[in-house]
Length: 181
Ligand SMILES: C[S@@+](CC[C@H](N)C(=O)[O-])C[C@H]1O[C@@H](n2cnc3c(N)ncnc32)[C@H](O)[C@@H]1O
Image (cartoon, rainbow, N blue to C red):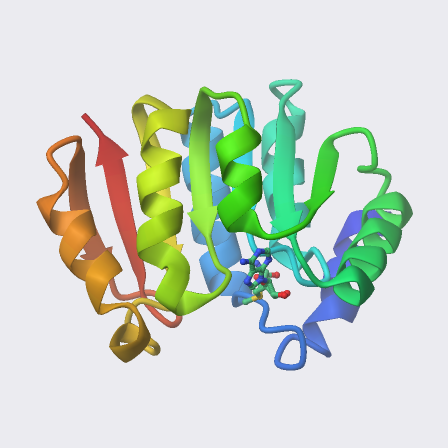
């Protein structure tokens, strides 16, 4: 087993405490990234970096990078340690701070954006993420079934936004996949 594989298995023991996506969802998203040859991934909501590690592995073969945003200093420190253990410190840039502010400072284009932070803020993340995403790039919102009641504005916007074509996918806690037209 590689360093990465054993670390991912180890992290799965604490998945609930760190609100990580499931392995099934991780494999699905990683397959999308590899199929589209993604080079630049943006993640809103790092936690301990479980999903970030899957994204980093997926873009590694294309020499890509992952930018991930987290405002909790403790979880950011744990994530950095995990990135280092897996040998991905060079592939991943973790930016600490409120994603609603950080998103305004980033330069696109990104191929793939993953929204997995504060549910009521998803509509704000989406508005800021659309201009950062390339044509035919994907913006994915997580927990769209399990926490639908906390994100009504996002769920309306994702399907009404003129620059997006969206579809709900019932995997894990639910995701909404939006392709930029
Ligand atoms: C669901 S967890 C992320 C899980 C991670 N994507 C995974 O699957 O391994 C959400 C994280 O977003 C962070 N967060 C929430 N609101 C944020 C904000 N406005 N800016 C930055 N980080 C935020 C929380 O501190 C938490 O660690």
